[in-house]
Length: 315
Ligand code: VAH
Image (cartoon, rainbow, N blue to C red; front, side):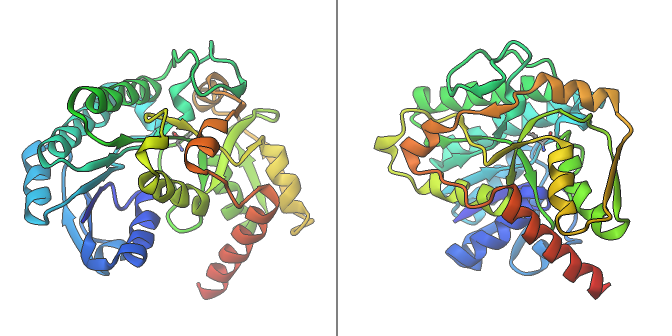
């Protein structure tokens, strides 16, 4: 049985649906601090859970005899930068609570890291799997500390912890909240709704991105990987494309010729983006557990626009 925290978030809402299909609804316990006001909470087992309450996590893990914990509850980079101490308490407090329960219940454990775990002194192009990590954001501090804590639980307690450094994730089901890469999601929504988009990230700002289906597949592949092949654990570099706002706009214009992009830079999120790599080297993930994304900018754009058009017509 798998316990998911943050099941109503951008990753959680789609991962919950996919895991229910893959492993059976009765084996997925979706939890979130928000009440069950979204589809993910009404079509399977759902429990309200505040991950800052370790006892509450333990009680659910016990009640459902959980053997895997996928811990997604966290504040993303831009929100964390606005409320750094809240982010520290939720991101680190929630993680150590979830790790402690996983240790007590001997669960396999997954929590995401991010390209945000790198900083300005990290090599920006073909960022190595093993390299300097001195992020300058609270979110990045949380992600590096999280990677080290998960490795510690593996080496010290033999806990089967596994993690990936996600790039920006693009999806059409649940819009992300509070991220720096969210422009790459909003641009598609606005292309359909308004035919134009004003980017808060500057032209020429490259970041790694990935379409949600590839991100979900990566979680399942890593969690099912033969542990004897894993030289790394927390956390694997993975990416599907490195793009700047004008690249996405040019791809959208192939389908919507009148789409226009302009800029109104948000200095805070621009500074975060500039502290992150341009493009990761994900050879370790490909070698150790067969990571192999299916979507690039071209076929992701076709799918995103098609799915959002369908939703627009259903409104
Ligand atoms: C954010 N989408 O922008 C998240 C992610 C790599 C970016 O960590 O904070």
